[in-house]
Image 1 (tube, rainbow, N blue to C red):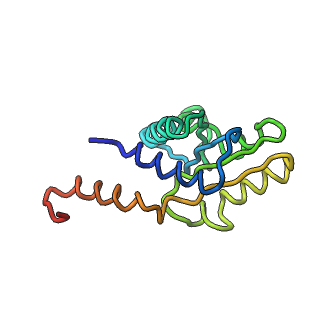
Image 2: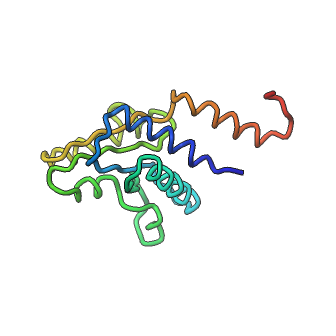
Length: 156
């Protein structure tokens, strides 16, 4: 059973191209953050597949995470990674979020984190991708997952 990482990476690749991914841009893959290592492992699989798809290094980060070493599997916070970028860096943040909401939507947490980083570091250029909702490949991936979870073949 495939993980879906390749399909998600392809969706994220196309989202990055929509915001004019340049050859020197730093690419960050950002998810919500989770107290569950399995979720972080899935993000890393998507990160690796995305790095292959766009032929460059992709750094992973999370919007938020619990304090302490026990949660280091989440990686660094988005804010920390953005503020640590080299002077004049151009960053593209690929959002591993299914839909807009209080985190990834207009005026949401991600937008506020980016605005805060740019206020502290006006030398940076930071753009975020759209969320995955509405991507043409998403419906196929979700239907495939649903079909795998239901033993009856009601989708054919």
